[in-house]
Length: 352
Image (spheres, rainbow, N blue to C red):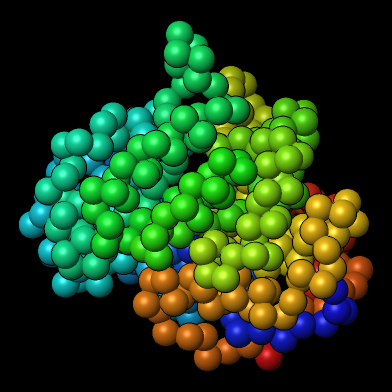
């Protein structure tokens, strides 16, 4: 890899910006990661299920930083009818996010079965709204389902939806397994996948011992991490950046009870990707010559925009290999959010 890269600004097609004080703390960090466009998840409390809610949420985000392009989404539940789909398209909503019931943060109102949504998916296919899927089945010990195989067991459902609605654009979010990479590749051009920075660098052993590396879906095996790295460098548009940056106050990570699932990567979104690729080369998971400027530019900036029909970036970022140390946390608006890999070195980033 080179010591310096200049790219169009990155686009992050999976972010959690929360609301209220947490938004005020994390939204100002978006551009620190070289990102000018974000695809905003709708799992607030209550979830964003109406066009009016989505537009009001967008206004709140713009009031914090109006230099970022916020692409808004709705939360899939029984209220998302074909009429709502058409209204959403007219209002500029970019997609609809499906969460399996109870699998991750604020997903208690999520999907149990996809069959009741055929009319909704048909309308989405017709008007061009994207279906974003958190691709896991709920844990069920009686059926031998755990966090380690929940994604792989979901993949037949992805293939069924794609077969039934072949023109519906679908994104399998935050893929974590070799199986998921293969499934996305097996689908037609209307199906893509996002890959996070932390899943490119973590394996389950690290996540088990560190609450700040705990996320849903969980990191998997070294073999799966290797598959993700290879999916990135051979992507050619099939996979692109979606950090799934998910901030939680430190009290939700280290306080009483279960730790909240989510890794906070927003302030170093682009930098973490380059670091993960460097580490992958050092482990011989990928080869240095595979990490071309075309691959980096495509994954960070171009391929996701093309899939979603978003205009190319007009600004550029410069990434330089150096001795930048990731701070411990973001402290603002009464919250504290610990950075992923705090205290370690990463790339320096400047806007050109």
